[in-house]
Length: 74
Image 1: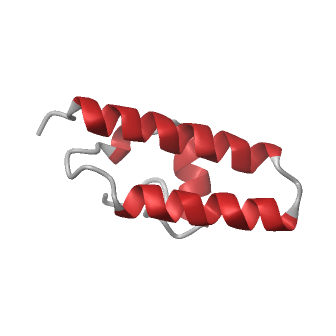
Image 2: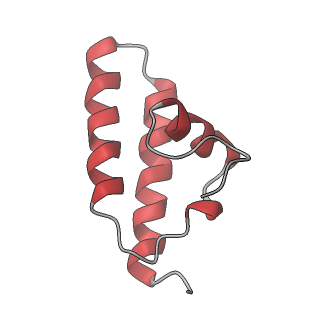
Image 3: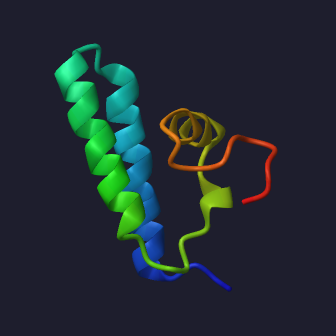
């Protein structure tokens, strides 16, 4: 199924939030960003193609247990 425009925008929002997570060193900010990521992913459009995430984003989301680790079935 092709990714919708909404899903494309949501994927970009998730990528940006992952970037914020990587740049933050404050424990409370990182927790807040991780919670925002959980929310974004749980409410994402059903056409969201998680294979289009950057490798860095996939690794971080897998570390947060929001996506399966790289190399595993999606």
